[in-house]
Image 1: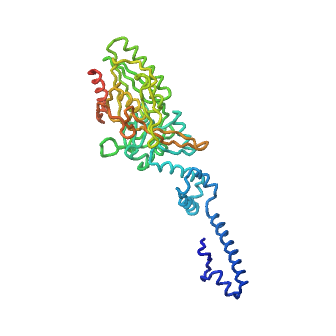
Image 2: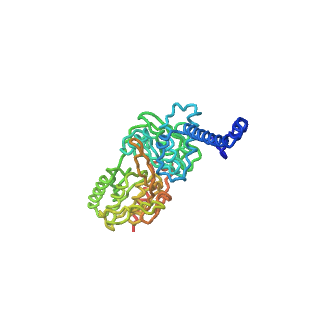
Image 3: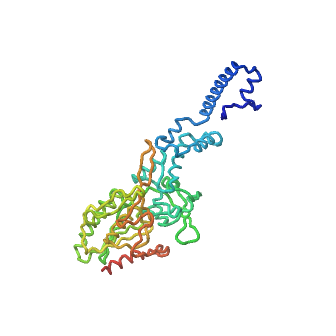
Length: 435
């Protein structure tokens, strides 16, 4: 309701002053009375307009629920479009009764997180937060694979060792085009997880595009309880000790220490048993502390393992070796990596490569080098937000480039199906010809 030039127009286009002039003669006293009356009427109309407008706006409590106004710089944000959409949904959406105000608040916050364009920055409303906490604890049912966004496409980082996904034939690098009948274009990783996960014994159809194949394939996976494996060791007759690490869990540092002790005892039997392969292929990562602890067995105290880059805010914490450093220059060490090696795997491989402790063999790593912080928002909701990027000791961005191995070796689908492993063969060759 607008008041222009202190006028309030009726349907005939006459002002209050015009109406009074018709009814009463214009004496000086009358003019004063008219003026005072007009001011009173205008005041009533003005406050009536304010009251009517306030009734048409959402309640102030809703505004406070959605946004802490003190945290928004004055004059920088116009929330009127938000509230217009809110009201239009209330008034016109056919199923508005099935959507609560709180549902709209959670949806708005999810949209706010997605506006960053970062696939790893996510808001979890109550139901999703419960699932997320289960993931952290390692207790869940599903298909057992790590997924992420690569080149704006939902991609399998790696199926877990012995998981339903691996048994069904899902491979690292597979692009997920559909989950059952849902097309994944513009779908976030967390939304995809909700569709893929389910009760043990149920099935999910994954439409995948593999490598440079032109036609997609459909793989049906039967969901099950996921027991995340951690480590395996193998003593080869040619004097090579292999440690296969499948995840960076809380237990990984202890299990890795035990594996190294096993390697040392074995190497004491024969002087030539000084060749070590650490297989990080298909390892999607995990705890940073685990990667730092493992790298510390090979580096002197204080050596940089990984840096945190906070962008415009500058460099954050620098994580350094704890200085266990139990091996000498006689150690011949190769790390196997591929497109399924991500996060903590890339930190460990990048550190030992930059410090010339190990040679890398295999394929370029996934490039999941961002740091997420989990922030409680309410009692039962959380925000997972990217706060920094990982940099190797030499300053290479893991997120932007991944880790490129010293010896790049591809593995074809045919070789995989036949049980051949050209990447492992190359690693063995590098160790035997070590100089």
